[in-house]
Image 1 (spheres, helix red, strand yellow):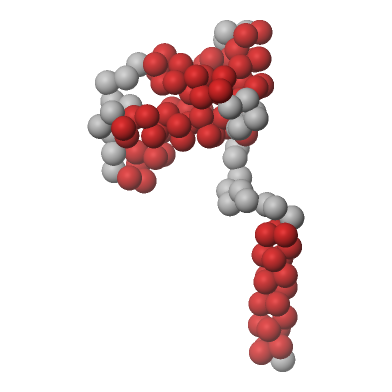
Image 2: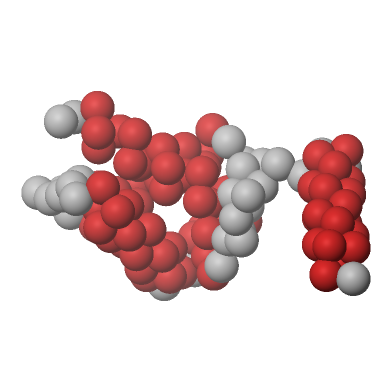
Length: 115
């Protein structure tokens, strides 16, 4: 009985993974908060109300902090929040269909390139 349950569980898990692959699902994580907003919406929101900058800046700061924690780095040290969010917005202006989390990844790549 126990062996049958394990086999059924494995088959079910494999079916879910195959179905996810077939459906084109490529995301491996859930994006919470402002990071799940499309870049087009971020740009529009900021054009309509500059106060939204604080929301995106806070999310970006948290994303960068988590990256630094996981990699024992200090990326962003010496850079003002304004410069970091401006870099993210540069990415968003060029990639309106991407989510804001991709802009955060871009910021990290830019910071890594600067040393």
